[in-house]
Structures are given as C-alpha cells and as structure tokens.
Image (cartoon, rainbow, N blue to C red; front, top):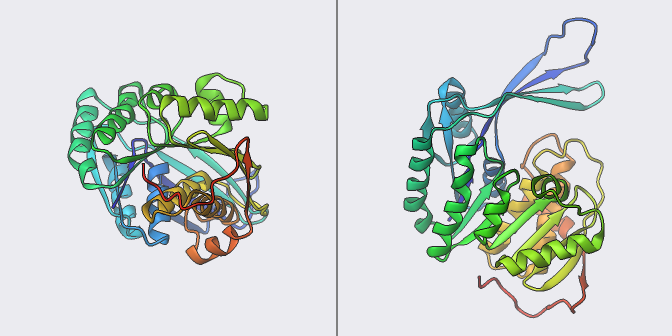
Length: 322
C-alpha cells in the first residue's frame, strides 16, 4: 500500500464564469470545492490507476472540515493531524469564454512545534505499514521544515521506498537525507537551491550529484519539454508527447503517481518512466487535476521516446530492487 504525505494541503473553491468583465462585478454560475495539495493530487491519480493508497495531512478550522468532506466525497482515503490554524484555501477563476484559469491563494497555515512533533510521531507508526512513501509539496512554515527529512530517515530505517517531490527552504535537508527517488521541476530546484540549470550539462551534473548523495532514481522535468532522468549512474533524456495545454496544474503530481505506479508493480525503468510522462502530458490537456484515464496513459506511453546518455540503456529485467 502507498502512503502519500501532504503537509501544505489546500481547499480550492472553483468559480465558473461564462465570461468576465474587468470593469464590473461578475457572478459565477457554478462553484465547486476541490481538494488540493501535491500529495493529495498524487493519491487522486493513484486511485484512477487502481492503486490502493492512504494520504496523510494536516486539517484545521472550518476549511479543514470542508476539505475533510471533499476528500471523503472524492473517495480519497486519508488520515490527519488536527491543527489550530486554518487549512489554507484558494479561489480558482475559470473563464469559459477564453478557457483561462486564474488562481489566488491564502497565506500558508502556521503549525505549532507540538503539531509537527505529533505528525512525525504518527509517521513513525504508519510508515512501517506501507511499501512506498510519497512526500509531496511545499512546507507551509519553518516549524514544518523538519517533517520530510524526519520521514525520510524513518522510512530508510524501515527499508521503504521514499519518493520525494518538494521544493523550498527544506529541499536541501531533504536531499541530504537520501530519499530513494527524487522528482523535481527545473524552476523549483533553481529557486530552492540558488543554482543555475539552464544548460543541459548542468542538469546532468545535478542528477549525478543526487546519485552521489544516495538517491537511486532522479527525474528533472521542465513542463512539456524534453527532460533528464537517472537510474543510479545511468543518465537518460526523455521526449514527452506535445499536447495542447489547458491547465498544467497537477501535471507534476500525475507524473509522480506514474513513477509510484511503476515501482508498486515492479515495472522496468523505461516502462514506468514513459507511463509517468504520458500521465503528465494528458493531465495538462484537461481542466481536471490528476484524473487521467489509465488506458489513455498506457496508449500514449507507447509513443514516448527515451535516449540513453553516456552509457547504453539497460533493457534487461531491471525490475526495482531498491
């Protein structure tokens, strides 16, 4: 079973408009509440892939109650630590006239040291019961920065696979803790670590540096552009299919879900990397977040190309044994 961890969840209120007039008041014709946060998105996509999972998060205040109801309505299995502060919220404006999306978010919630300690204590109890631990999304505050590094240490001690997809001030400490798998966006890494990854060589060097830290699988994506990956000291360039983008929100989370899906079923590297790339592309084609149909992803994955760099790609049975 898979455990996804989201320490900065989001309650989204989506307002739908036929059109918008910037010089007058606008009234939506429909509204929806949606559950957000990167780990929650991963869980949703795993549900669509038929993989049993549990998401673990913080919930606080009335927003937390609404998010709890939304998760239940969506069929996302979850457990949570209560927080005194309100769960953050966002308003998403969908203008159907030009199919545009605009998002506005509240400040991150503040967590107390006790809430963080309680969260880590619960991780110590739930991690041993799961095979893959997915740590996704940003940290909401300085107090919470120690959660992901602690989770990686706990999971490594339990010999679990850890998939990390995060950014921000705590990223460096997370990488030092040596998760099994790392997925990052180029912009997120540059901003979080104050490094330059504009050149292809610098991207490959970054992946090699992760391997030196003990990371066994790395994926450095860049929207719909070709991206780089590594398995141990083998480097690859992946060419995703180009699509007409409607809303790229959650595409990185759909990609992460694809990696987790492949590891869960012990697929070989090239197979699950293609599936992950297909999920990311198909998610961007839709206004829905992480609701990609499994069969569509499998079909598209067959057309995605992977090129080995430096060493010949291993096409033997390299089923995960991490």
